[in-house]
Length: 177
Length: 86
Ligand SMILES: [Zn+2]
Image 1 (tube, rainbow over the protein chains, first blue to last red):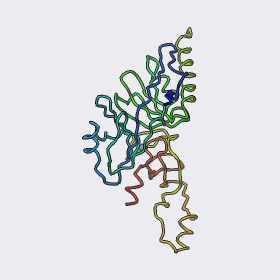
Image 2: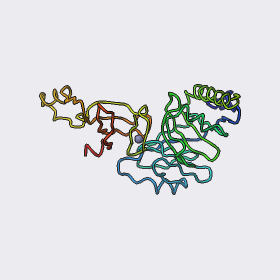
Image 3: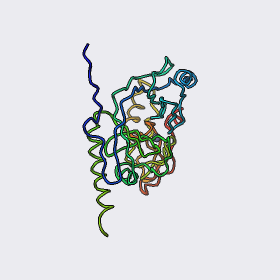
């Protein structure tokens, strides 16, 4: 039996630390998008099977190793568990995304340059769809900073964009007046 | 310009895609050629208040009816297209 080696989306690019900020990649996990059929009740059955029900708009719910994100109108992403059979359109999206965490003191300044969201309004566990640079992204506010998810094919561009801004923000912070 | 999405809240204009007049919500019956011609091609195009369809493309993916004044860029109201088309 051939033992395949899993390669993460940002393999060889991360982690990177510049100034006070660190960008790290999160390990690949099982992921499914869940889009409930019109008027269908799925939350209770989902909760029974995975420990998490459907979150409110713009929110995430985490229980032990399982998390569910609101990702669009009528669309959710379940991470770390297999969804049961539900009256919903379910798509396996494992390996389809790249997930990184930007942390450190300068993280809000970096995000302010690449993302049009009003990030100061986001609290821990808040989720938003928006842009990072020209890429459509899922942005989640975490205790340590911002988690950013983009389509896997954008991994290199995401790291490039954030890295450039991390360098620039650090340079400006260290320039003499 | 900012648009207050009923689902996501106040967001930057670059997250939205513009389609055209909200007349697109009133699709005429099939076969009525005169009505279809008007539906596709005839617009009021006022220099003032208009109602347009916008897609929250980089956000929640909702279609919105945005009422705005094209001469002042003032946004007067935003509704979900699914509610308007009910
Ligand atoms: Zn929206």
